[in-house]
Length: 179
Image (cartoon, rainbow, N blue to C red; front, top):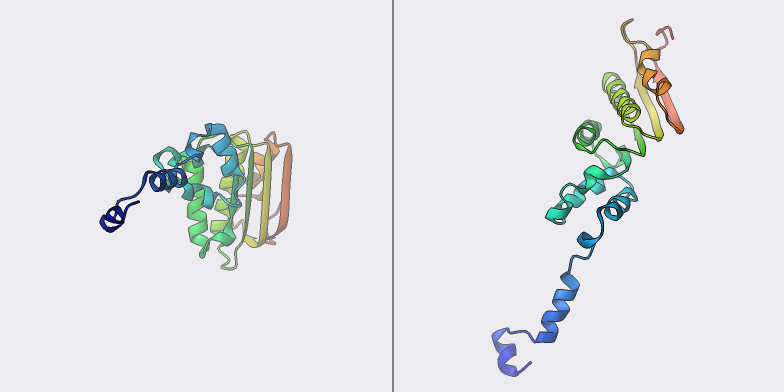
């Protein structure tokens, strides 16, 4: 570039080509199935959802991810985690190959825990999920009345076609629930 070009802020053709090469969006040109698979490899669906800001083409890519992974550790508040899980399940494409949820509830929201796990189990069972993994730590779940028994809570599991079902951690159950 000439001294005059440098003084006026003009760029040479080589500099323009170098800038264009580094700012080209190569990911958006991949087939959707590959993008969905890449998003499935992220540690948590929170990261997959955040990719919607990358470009208009990515705005709804997270809705088609075949593997859902929810990790409560990526949220500061349990209520935010619950809201996120409900929102993702209500907005996404219904096909799910695998679903994993892991969290600890130090705040002891029994009613919210029962509702969250029931929603995840029901969603997985009704959407053809092949693999369901639930990893909970110190999650209290009480069944306070006769109208909502433990067997009703897990009925979707018994009526599903899961290939694998994993439970890790432990759930604190109300001792007087009459299973």
